[in-house]
Length: 364
Image (cartoon, rainbow, N blue to C red; front, side):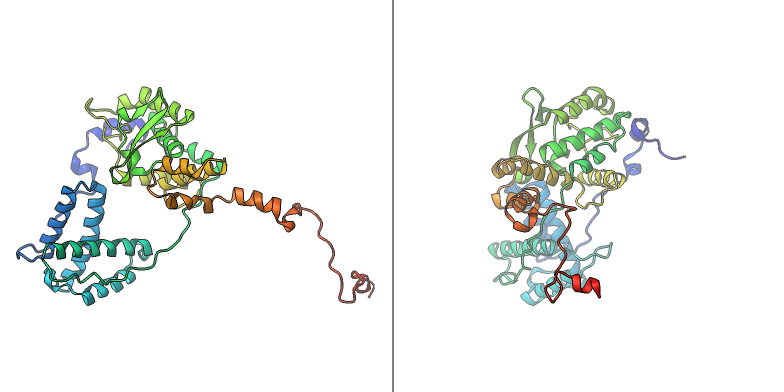
């Protein structure tokens, strides 16, 4: 018997044990910690140091994942002590990282490689400051060159309408899903930001939303009228049916009555994109890009878009000026001589080599 769908699945989900729910439960990493100089012990101390300096859980998890990859590579080569790591060792790891293939057969992107090596550099810089190492083996490690790549192409208004029509709003869970999509597009949220939203973050009277952003930086953003209507309908009709504990403050709830996991949210949006016939990468981020691009094309100042998206540097937001082709097309059509030819207009007949306009050739 297949699992029930939609709101009918909520009662069924509530009866499942934590083991039946699946998910990514933490597992022991298996690294050796039996000696005082063990790399794994220093990794733990490094992460604890970052936590004591108020680094966000997302940052800590990212650094732990990067160090876990390096420690696993080092353990395979019997390199388990910090004193065994030299510059040639790190350069070998860098070449291995370049050749590494993910389970889907793809290589790591250059930005991912640069990020992971940058974390290693910071880790060994910290070890040197703690006098664990006499010199920093990563100090002269050269990182891959930065790429200047455009973000995923934004959805057109028609494509956006197709995506928004995918959730079945006749079912209460479809109302919830539509409200999440509308809020993604209206506010340009990151997936983790939407997952962390609390009931108190929404001010319906002022039409604003308090967002807990990256690096523990809060911001307040406006909420569009259409998005607000869907969120209010969800709060009125759906959330009470999903809430199993009145102490739960998360704005959007799963069938289990808790907040969403970002990975689960990505899989949901990815499935909706496929159902809408849209071949896009980036899932939730596509709606963030679409929000920024549409605002820019409709005349918004880039500094207001920077504030909406929560970018620390204007350079990060400025990339949308390169993504938006609409304004460039308008200037091109107004200023470039060749652009004045209308589509479907008959092109002139090319003259023949003897200069008679082709009449000689036609009469031959």
